[in-house]
Image (cartoon, rainbow, N blue to C red):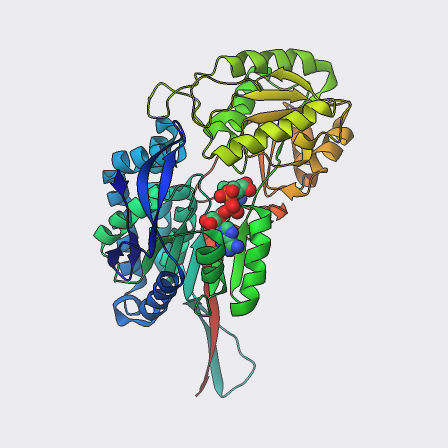
Amino acid sequence: METFKLYIDGRFEAGAARFLSRNPATGEPWAEMPEARGDEVNRAVMAAQRAFNDPAWRGLTAGGRGKLLLRLADLLEANADELARLETLDTGKIIRETRAQIAYIAEYYRYYAGLADKIEGRVLAIDKPDMESWIRREPVGAVAAIVPWNSQLFLSAVKLGPALAAGCTVVLKASEEAPAPLLAFARVIDQAGFPPGVVNVITGFAAECGALLSAHPAVDHIAFTGGPETARHIVRNSAENLARTSLELGGKSPFIVFDDANLESAANAQVAGIFAASGQSCVAGSRLLVAESIKERFLALLTRKAEAIRIGAPEDPETQFGPLCTARQKQRIEEVVGKSLEQGARLVTGHYALEQGGHYYPPTILDCDGHPDAACLRTELFGPVLSVQSFRDEAEAIRLANDSAYGLAAGVFTRDLARAHRVTGVLRAGVVWLNTYRAISPMAPFGGYGESGSGREGGISAALEYTTTRTVWLRT
Ligand code: NAD
């Protein structure tokens, strides 16, 4: 059995207790994980606070921080095979996805490495003849970065990259459901040569590790990705330390296909949009809204593509679709789909038992026309379930698209440029993809409205989120 360690103040340690992590493809335990409890959480945060004020980090130039981030990017690539293997083993995410992701994660670190020395203050045109005044941009302090189990290397990169570029220090909490990728990444961070305490990597359970970390008085900023219910706990916890919060939460993203769309391209994007990562993606295009006149044709196309997806062992490079991360996740999806069928939704494809064992659940499509209260239309399933509704005109498409407590992403497929602009202008979503889906880049801000959270990751503004201003006055 493989074993992992916590990374606190530049040292690897075994943790207060150990717990087993299961391989989602088999349901069998495969690794022993270290659990951080009160003492470990406290030491990790205190290490981050100390490191923040330590000249070894504080005295480093912005360019020096950038160089460390560049080294981290190179080492990430050098260790890509091992990190991808571990992420696949622990989360069930297929190897071709984990490998591909690591290549572009390195680009996020490089992007923020380049930004480190471009964070600038400014001089005020102050209205007093005997004074000068200017604004310094300062790093905000010790950051608690808390991530869910899907895409942890990516979700931590969009926090670590800008936070370290800005000069903050970080306690990164890996998800207890699958901590292997981040605990292994701690070894890469160690090799990169950050001063001890600048980055600490821990894992543990929500009630102790998560709650203590987010309420810790020495935490200045909480960067959270996860579900909206957890976010509510975290915001309540942050009443203790009055830390700033940025929240990247769930989604129930609409995928709108108008009758003039290129149906082949829309169908490919929709299939990848909902079934990639077995649907365990915050931006999963889980609500298809399709023009009534093309509904049957488009559904037939989708069904053919969904049924052709190769389901298999996640470590096999030929596999296109793997298991869900946890048994609980599978059970919840089965329940919501079962309830939606009872409520009248029609099963187009999927929702059958797979032979593989483990936590597999097949690509599933539900036609919800005439059943607007079907549970699958409202609940974020975080799984491979596409709910379908049809619309008669643009106004109805927009009404249905915005009829959600979430507001993370949206896809629009049309050849009508004016319509694309009109619809984009009124969609309640932090990201709109026109005739494409899931495009991302380090340069592009990402985030949501409502239950999908607040704050934006990615782009220049994300680095500024980890800074605060200090106004200086000088009597001349
Ligand atoms: P989750 O909210 O259950 O857990 C996320 C993290 O929060 C874990 O590390 C967990 O230990 C920690 N946590 C749980 N309770 C806590 C508490 N009381 N205090 C502090 N920390 C606590 O999420 P999950 O089920 O692991 O992941 C799925 C969710 O994440 C979905 O809603 C998904 O949409 C969302 N997500 C959002 C994005 C985005 O960028 N918007 C990306 C990926 C996933």
